[in-house]
Image (cartoon, rainbow, N blue to C red; front, side, top):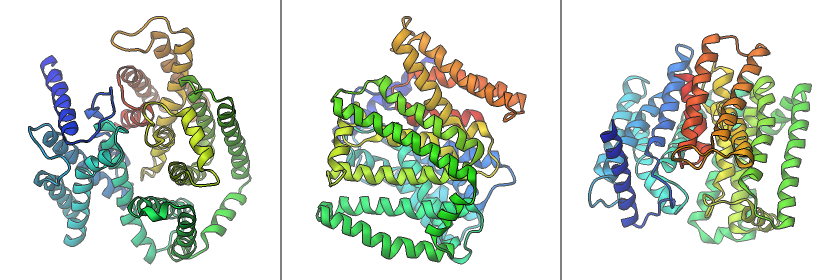
Length: 471
């Protein structure tokens, strides 16, 4: 076992050397995090297996894609660990996951030959060569494992669009969750397209051109497309969806209060010009938990919608910050300077990771997933990580072997998560004793892993907890 572990470590070191020799900057002072790479593919495949016979077509396709992503991850790591490789060039080995994924689409999903080959080739290329390109365009922002997980998440999102949007052109959605999915997919694709256009054409980064592009695209393309796909006004649907139910109105008002508190905390730090500590950043974890737990319990569809809108807004605000466009660009840049850590040198990834870590169980195409897997992000980064940071920084005296974390922080992390789980059980939201036992072991195991890893907690821990609670 020790020999295999040493071999795995040497493989990671060789990969980092290969990346650096090709002028691709790995995040400094961090291990490659190879074990993170297959987590997104495993999550997609596990969701499909968990659904059993009640899965939808998109769940089947994303489950098969998850298998392709796992194979892509293995091919990428093996290739990068060989001697004297040209990393940025597209390699023949990347065709292997494309061929396997295309075959899965063709025979298990009953897609046509042309569609299977097109989708399989896209998945195979984006999930391998795309990882390298992401690290190249965002130097120093990722470890290899993090870049792999992020790229694979984008692949799953693009595949869900390719599956769902053509279907809605012929068959407009009826259920609220399906309508919200179409709106979010088109909206997030719109924001990603703006980012891509600005990256490709420097002239669009100027203030007038940027706002003209954003406004015209929204009015001329996005809203009319949504009208066609939904066979109704998306704005009117959102209005009536919210105000037709008093619980949704109360929740939105409560969330607005949480948002104002977060904004006030940011402004206070900017005005005081004091660098935020790790404990200060955990305030946002607590506020996010206050948002997500009531939403998960009472209005998951509304939370699903709001989380997608929040992701689109965060991406757009990050573009404004990066380009320093008025009126918010300078204010956002000041906030970034106060709250950024070593992981946010180029892009503000930490808030994006926090939102995605909390939300991704909601975004998976599952129909009957339980409350605990849905709360995997809340448990790990919302509750456990915040409790560990607070207790560890104030009372942590006994350091764990081989870690900067303390035993007191680890205990707080475990106890706080178990307290939430057993509180939910006490209120009748969890009635399966086997699930309680499994979640207890999952909390302990994932918390121990968190003390050992150098990777970004907000991204890694929710994925790992989600898998532990499903499998």
